[in-house]
Image (cartoon, rainbow, N blue to C red; front, side, top):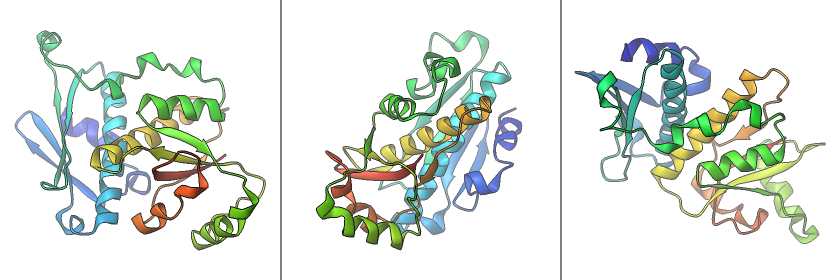
Length: 228
């Protein structure tokens, strides 16, 4: 069952970039791992963890649809970089003894509570994952630097609003939450055909992310650029 649920999730390689991560079945546990060859590259490792976060969020939702309860334990760290998370399906009598992180318990954020994919919706979901969504600063003195950054990233802002998905720290747990957030936005967009999916740019090097914090007020670390 673990493998069948995962396979139902990862049949979209462009969405989850299966080249960055892999999995291993060990008894009744499913391990999600960053591929070893990317562990020494900080930017690729970060993307492997973000995509793993997307997979974990999607797995949890698929398991719910199949009436399967899960225990998901995540423990990425910079010392033991390969293992990102372990998933186990719970038996009927295990509910009182085990729990899944509240980050996956989206019953408290039903689709009906988000009638449109507006900035307030994106901000609320970012807050759910312990992050912040800040609008682009409009200080005219910063415009040339902003334009240069967007040009280097091949991002066209014409007629669009830009936000920064910001965090107070920059580590593998934050990158997992970035993946949770990204996938949750996709799920909401797909569950309601009237919701427009924003354009999310998260494949940004640490150097470039560090150089764009001035673009968003009170933003120690930028995890992604969001265009709506």
